[in-house]
Each structure stands twice: as structure tokens, then as C-alpha cells.
Length: 321
Image (cartoon, rainbow, N blue to C red; front, side, top):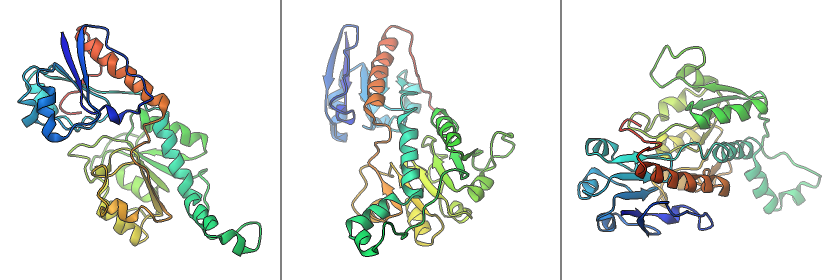
């Protein structure tokens, strides 16, 4: 009988149904797990479910019965995958579930910032409409999406879906070639050209040692069109101190972030210091979290576990992912 331990069930909304796996098992569910509780809670477990609880090599080394880490998300940076690969522990993740919810959130951020909805809402609440003395007022610039050049970093399922929606808006999507790479082919726009010619830049790539801090001051200074920066990927992709500086210097028009480098961010973190600005929108890592997407995630999570136990594993992740 397999012992399955879900370390952080609270990372999936309570209304989402998590079906019981169709094999003999013991399922132990914890709403959340502190780092010092991980080893004790996973003792004797053959299957661990985690969304964001970190499973380091030091922790995994104390769990000899563990055979599968089922990550309840696409990103697997919370797991030491190299250790798992070297020690016969499979790692499976969730794929394709956010193909609607993340792109829709991405465009919600784009539209709100391009049309200055937050700034206008604040003005209305402050009585500016009445003071204007007419049917409208023009305190903030408004820009259409049509014709805008959209730099997309990440050409996976989410990046492709964002490009599809962009074309429907009449935008010009540009898939960025990898930073520092040349010869990517005609379907990709060179990295430096993407930075210099985009009106909006949106990030849809995983966080790895190679992508951490991929957008920093050198990149912001190369953004000659003062673009919006949209990040629904991972907070660490953008140097947050550099983001604040870029906003202060007017190098970018605004920022729409659903992620932070450290979640929840500290009250005095760079992201929280700019969160109240009218050209900044910070949402609490919920781009993925429509009810429809979460139910798909929960179903696929159990599918991955059942398939592993049945000897036909799905969505396995290697150490390089």
C-alpha cells in the first residue's frame, strides 16, 4: 500500500475536488507544511505531493521510501531534481492546464495598464470626475493594443497561446531568441532587437539558474520604446531592484506582475514598495488559478500518480527542466 502525503493542500482552492487515487493507499493531507515539518510528515511516504514546499537534497536524503514527487504545478524549482534523478525518485509535474487562465490574466494586465484603468479608477474615487466639470477627462494616456509589438519570452504552450490572442487583437507578436544566443532562425527575433522594438514584453519561461535575473538594468536600458513589462512566469526572472530603478528613471511605461521573488513578498520588498503606483499592478500569483484551470490541475495530478503506480508514468521531469 502506498502512503501519499500532500504537503500543502491549501495551495489549491477549497472548492476544487481532489479525487481519491484508484489503488490501495493511505492519503495524508496537510493544509501547509513548514520546512522543519517536512521530513517528519514524509516519513514512510512513497509519494509526496507538493506545490511550493521545497524538497532539497538534504531533505530527500532522509526519505528512503520516497519514489515519486508529484508537483501540483508546472514549475519544479522547489525540488532538487538532480538528487532525485541520481537516487531513483521520479518527479512529475502538471502541463497544459493553464493554457487559458494565464494568457487571459496576461491580457487583463496589459489592457489595464495600456488603458490606465487603475489610475482612472483612483481618480474617480478621489472625485476628479466631478471636478472636471464635463463628461470625461484626460489625466492619463490611453493606448490601443492593435499595432503594438509584443515581445514574448518563452515559446511554450503559454507563449504560443499569448501570441494567438495577440494576433486577434491586431498586435505583432515577436518570439525572443534566447538571451546571448544567435542563429535561432527566422521564427525568432534576436534578443537585443526584441528589447529595443517591443511596446510590451511578457515573460512565460521557467526559472532556472540560467534565466534568473534575465531582465536587469542592461536590458531595461536597451528598451528604447519604454514598454510595459508583464510577468506571469516567475518573480526571479526579473531583477526587482532594477525594475524599481527602471520605473523611477522612466525606462519602462509600467509593470504588471503576478509573481515576486519570494512569495509572499516582504512588506519592504521592492515589489511592495511600488505596488501602489498607478502604472503598476501586482497580483498574488493567481494568474493560473481560475476554477476551471485548478480542477484540470487537480485531475491531472491524480492522473500522474495513478499512471506512475500503474507503471506507465506521465509528465516526468528530468534534472534539466
